[in-house]
Every structure is written in structure tokens, then in C-alpha cells.
Length: 439
Image (cartoon, rainbow, N blue to C red; front, side, top):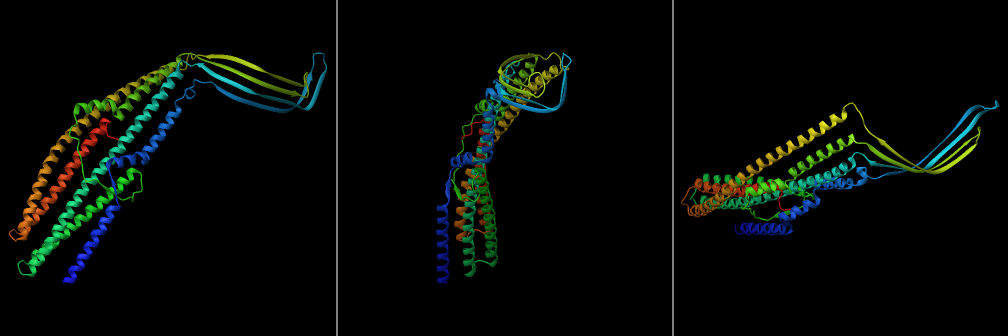
């Protein structure tokens, strides 16, 4: 018996040392560190950042059509013809397969000087598209940071539940050992021992399931952070709630900073600039052309057998649309309707966000109250469990009452951790809507 007890002690010590060594190897990851890693590695943020770089590259006078285009040109042709020529003096010449050759090359410039101010509206539109890309990047960042924080604090509350289940499993094992000793000395029935063993197995099953869920959530957090999903880490056992959020300030921040709302304001501005470009078609288009050209030609038959020319050419052209089947009027009507729709979408988006904000704020207040209640309830359940354990050890309460106190404590811890997590989730949701989430 002493050898068996010594063997069990050695196994427990080795297991404890192994667990400590594993815990020391794990990275202690804070929520700020998790956010920083995600901002650097997250695939969605990288893709939206690349899209923004494209928008930035397009903001240029040349892409808006303000600058001239300069082209080098060259063309040549050669042909063979059967030619018969009759001159004014009545003489004639003829030749089969007479060769004609022509070569043109040089540099040409084409510059639209005025296009009804469309080029300026187009340039402003490119700037607005860039701002839209910035708003989309901000939305992607807020969404990713929100996902990281929600998943991180989900891990925190799961870890706390895992610790509670581990503690209750230790208690269940002590209960089995106590029931076994009492059964051997004849102070308890076999039924009490069997009930204790069934409850221990139940607690162990629940522990394993919670452990699996905890590992899966860690894998999910690694995925959001854009790093190896097998990376091991540990989270801090603390959820700090910001209890000072004010609805009026949140509403003001949402109207000014919410990326979805900012994007809708930009879309309205883009629609207005589109109408400005459409109206520009009512005005003339004036363009200038200039070039320096070389020309060489040769002919086997004719008054001159070769010719060379070079020099500048300058030109100016104007074009005005007088009638195009009433399409100008239709295009302006369509552009005005698009502006109206963008205004309606802006109003709808604002109302929708205010509704989401109010709902989230009411949930936030409820969760704060529930969190305080569940914390008090957990303290009561712990005190009740301690008293029950002491009474059970001296045999003054039945097994069923002990098990009830044990389950009440587990449920109280689960509810308390869930309440803290839900309160934190409400806080994150409110700050994300208002665009003030700590990055």
C-alpha cells in the first residue's frame, strides 16, 4: 500500500512539473499584442490596403485627362502598280509593276484644352475615391480589431470556466477517495461510492469538452491574427470593463467617425461629381495638336521620282454636341436620381446605425447589472460550497446536497464569466460602431 501511494505521488509530481514547464513555454499574449499582430498580418487588411494604394496611384492630373499625350509615330507602305499616264502634250508613259514607296515618322502632341470642366470634376472624383478607400480600410481595421478582441476575451472567460471545472474535478476526486475510505470502514454504502465515481466521470467529460472548445478558440484567434494556427499561447485572466460609456457622446462619435457612414457621405459626393461631368457634355471640347514630322516618298513613274519633307504642324479643333437623341437630358436625369438615392441611403444608414447603437447600449447597461449580480452570486456559491465540503467530510450532510452545492458553484462561475464576457462584448460593439475602438 505504501509503495502504491508513493508511486501515485511520484506520478502527480511529474505531471505537475510537466504542466508547469508547458505553461512556461507558452507565450503570454495580451489583447494589445494580439491586435498589433493582426494589424500586421491579417489578410483582409492587407488586401484592402493594396486596394487603397491603387486608389492613391490613380489620383493624378494625367489620369484625369488634364495633361497632353505625346506619341512617336511611324508608318510606311510600298506598292507595285501597272501605271499608264497621259500628259497634257498628248504623250503617254506606261510601266508594269511600277514601285511606289512612302515613309512618315515623327512626334505628335494632342492636348485637350477644355472639355466642359469635366477633367476637373474627374480629378476631384479620384480624390473622393481615395477617401472612400481610406474609409473601407478603416472599416476593415475596426472589424478585424473587434474580432480579435471578442475572440480574445472569449478565451479569457473559457479559461476561467476551465479553471472552475478543474477545481470541481479535484473536489470530485477527493469525494471519491473519501467515499471509498468510508465504504472500506463500513461507514458508507457501495451506492455512495458509485454515485461519487459517476459524478467524477461527468465532471471529467465536461472538463474535456471545455478544453476542446478552448483549443478551438485559440486556433481561431491565431487565424484572425494571420499567423501559424498551431502557435501556443496563454491569455491574461482578466476582463476589464469600461463602465463610463455615454450614449450621447457615442451618437456624436458615430455620426462623425463610423466608417460606413463616412463612406456613404463620400458616395454622395462622388454622385454629385458624376452629375458635374455629365453636365460638362453641354459645353464644347477644344483640343490642340502639334507635331514634327518627316516624310519621304519615291515613285518609279511620274513628274517627280522622289520627295522629302520635314517640319512642324500645329492645329486647333473644337467640337460641340448639338443633338444626340435627347441622351444628354436623360443622362442628367439619371445622375440626379443617383444623387437622390445616395442621400436616401445616407439617411437610412444613419437611422440604422443609431438603432444598432441604442440597442447595443441598452444591452451594455443590462450586462453591467448582470455582471455585478453574478459576481455576488459566485461569492455566495463559493462560500456555500466551502461550508458544504466541510460538513460532508464530517458526514453531516447527504451526497445529494453536496453535489447540488458543487453544481451550483460551477454554474455560478459559468454565469459570472459569461456575464463579464457579454459586458465586454457590448462595450466592444459600441466602440466599433462609434469608430473609437482602441487600435
